[in-house]
Image 1 (cartoon, rainbow, N blue to C red):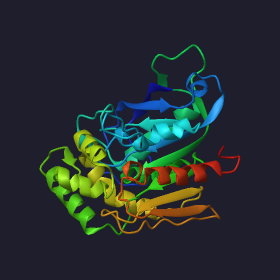
Image 2: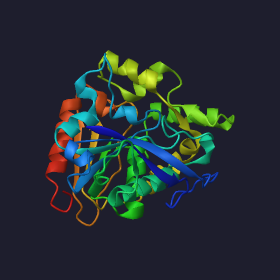
Image 3: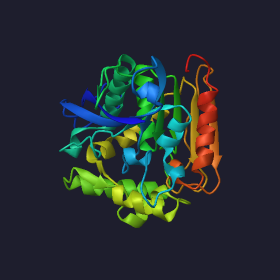
Image 4: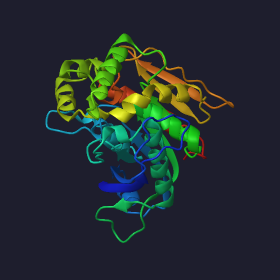
Length: 318
């Protein structure tokens, strides 16, 4: 079962990441989809662990919830997890799809992490809008696990380090301080577009380069759907990526964390993630897979690894 939901947030930065120019400081609405068992979505199950999915640059919430006539069931990460009894929040970050931003220079990744923190707190409190909400209570979270892909993994790490309010992290293809040549070329290209005052810059100059950044084994129908749905990146996010990655790398994770990577990922080289205070840190890699792990042919194995990790968390997470 699923429902459209939304969150009222303010686009400002409470993290240690420097953002120049500063975010606009204005109220915005973030759109999302809540997917899970009917008893949870209808507010009849009390509190529950929520899994919040945070997308990369250039993609959107569709990355986690890809559907269509020529797209297989195995590439719909959110729905397949919901079928296993998980409660999922698929979020459009500010500047993407149903969470529009007029000026792409008016935000940054520190602000994205701050707004994600507001989403987390709203889920704990049950203070968000649900379309067609029944008379039962708004579903609220007892614990939250953040799943982030690429730049979304950086946003998730910054949120966790800033607010210490989530119980675990699932980080897919996280951006590192040792990016591949392809990633550096992509960032330079985005920087040149942004320097011309565009506000938003394509992630990958062409459809071919976009596919190369994301995929190594995904079915053709999946790749074509992704190209149709691709988003440009807000230039504020582009400008703040280096400082955000450095800030995230400087903060050792202190919650259970699963790091997933594809061995054929052309966009990255290492992750630089370390644990502290005895926090559990696991790594899994997948032969033949690129960056877009939930959309690759290895998607079923990726989900099994995620489910094994989240199901084995102790009672403080569940």
